[in-house]
Image (cartoon, rainbow, N blue to C red; front, side, top):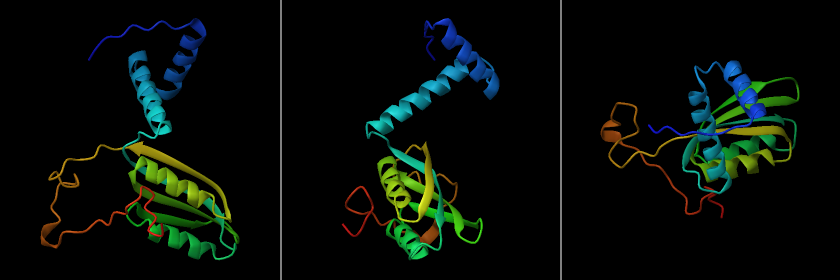
Length: 166
């Protein structure tokens, strides 16, 4: 680890100390490291340089909207290589909340999420992503067991959206 000296004005130090206290950090270094990682990740994503990620897409929609359930199901089927699972919750007679767990390239997750949130009938939506490191070939999926003789196949689309209709 390297030691870096940074000069901050008093207002920023006070804000940093409030952040540290509210989050329970043990010291300023831990907080600054986390803030730097977060800022670098956001900058990379904004520049389109994000690698692989896992994400939770949370969205609220009107299930009475025309063909809404069918359109959402089709979107997830078209992107089956990213869509791990979906949790569905009925909020009232008209509204449903879904949480879709996704994995894949950051750019593809963002594109899929933006298109789904833009669907007519989706009222609110937000994607939360966490970067993951891709494993080298032969390292398996990192869960400590083999897939055995059955193996499995991951279908990959030609474009970065995963949209097979293109």
